[in-house]
Structure formats: structure tokens, C-alpha cells
Image (tube, rainbow, N blue to C red; front, side, top):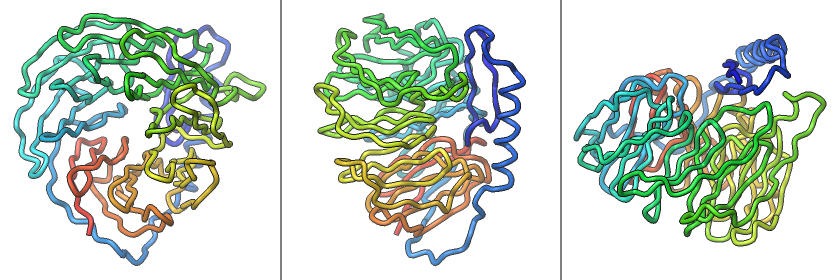
Length: 390
């Protein structure tokens, strides 16, 4: 098995894991070069518009860079946690950005930050999984079999992690002791991604390679149901990639997932029965909020879909090919970041651009997160920015 990094294979850094030698380097390199060129030529330009809302920076800070790792900040009731690829983890005051403590993990971080039940969790690219308490003291550290890719999740006394070898593993909160492991056979060609699992009311929901979605019992790992979001299609292995590369989203009634080169679909939580599906591709993800499912398409378009039917409500193409993040929701607005460090604010109901701000000119790689009455983003260079909107 080998991993080949393909810059701009899709609108952000991805890699392809190949088991065996079914696909030549040449084929991948041709795809990578052609996509890169298209991004350079055709990315939507930043255009001026009448801003009907105002972004106000509350505070800003910095941490070491995140390189090509998609690191997500974690927000709790009283703190904000951020990490760098080099292994730094910092606790900040939510309101002021003042640093409360900083720790070096001693390894390169590939997944984080996870937070909950008085734990702060980070995963490493050699399978390290570490848990701190909220005071910054190490509670435990364990070694997994492979690189940790998705943000570690914690709920009901259980920590759940997804690793690069296709495993989903659960450990207890107290000491990191293994509780169960789920493994499913994966195709010979898969997209390396940073999708995490989602946990809701005692069930773990995970998107898998080949367009499948599984629901597992949180306490035991027993499969409750498994279903298909998107069937692989095409004549070549590259064309047949249809992996779920972002975290499933959940509300009280349904769970939704989207596949790269595939479909978006929503399912009943209890039985996994299909509610609706439609053709749509994304490598970034989406958010489920009130009446709508907001999606960042593979081309950088932002779409709002009716959550009950999947029908289109609106579509904004003003950020096409700008490597736009998944949307974040706060109040009446959506927020996305792009590859030049711009933060774009859209009206939730109609998708209009209402505000924009530039940060440090480096890519925003994960969705903006709600923070108090505003939002927070972290850039690839390590810029930390907290905004209010009026």
C-alpha cells in the first residue's frame, strides 16, 4: 500500500490510498495537473458588493501552522481549544482570546481538537491519541494502529476515533481502555480525508468508503443498520471513487451524508430508511439547520436544500473554485472561508452575500465555528480570528 499526495485533485488537498498497483502514477499526476490549472484560471474573482451586514473583529491571535492537516477548533461553555500540526495545543478565553495554557503533545497532530466530558483530545499521524483534562494535565495516552484522521468524539463516557486503516474504535473516558472496534473492508482506491464520526443519543454515525453510512451502538459497537448513500460508478477506479469524505450531520429526525463524486441522502435515524437522495458531490461537507441542509459543492458553490425533500431552495456560485469550506451557521447567517483567507457571510434564507473580511491570506481549511454571538476561524498559517456580525 502507498499514499500519493495529489495537489488540487479536487478543490483542496487530498491524497489517494492505493492498495496494490492497479492505478498508475501517471494517471493520477495528469488529473492533479489539469485540476490545478483549472483552479488557477477559473476560480471566481473577489467582486465588490454592497455589504448589508458588518463584520467586527473581536480579537485575533496565532499558533503554529496546520500545514495540510484539517484541524478544527473545539468550543466548550467556557473555553476555546486550538492545535497546530507541530503538536501545540492551546486553551484560550472565548471572550478575549487570552491564552490560559499551552502544551506540546510531543507528536505531529493529524486530528483534533475534540472536547467534552472534561477531556481535550488530539490524534497523531502515527496513531497517538492523547487526552488532557481542562487544566492541561495529561489524563492518558494510547497508541492506535494507524494515523488518526477524524476529530476524536466523546459522549456518554466513550471516546470514538476513526483511523486511516479503516477502523472505528471506542475507548473509555477514564483511562483510554479499548471498548470495541469496528472494521469494514474498503476498496483498493480510497480518498484520504478528515471526516469524523457523529454521535447522537447513544449511536455513532460514520461515513465510509464506497458511499456507505453505518450506525453503531455507542456502548457496544454493534451495527444497528448500514445503508448506501452513493453507488460507485464509472469505468476506471478513479472514476468509481464515491467515498463519504465529510462528517454526517444529524438533527432530531434524520441523518444526512454526502459522497465525493456521488450523491447526498438523508435517512431515518432509527431504521436507516431512505427519506430522499439527489445527485450532488462534495469533499467539504454540510450543516443541517432548522428547515434546510446547507452544502458546499465540489465546485465551491453553496446550496440550500429543503431538509424534508432535498429540493433546491437557493444556490450561490460567487465562490466557485475558491476551495470553500463547509458552511458554519450562526444566527441568520452562514459563514464560509476560502483558499485566500477570505471569510464570506451569506444570508441563510436566500444565499445573498452580506459581508466579507480578509484574514491573513492563507487558506481557511475547516468550517467557521459559532463562538458566543459571533464566529471563529483558524487559518493554515495559524491565524486565529474571532468576529462579531452586526
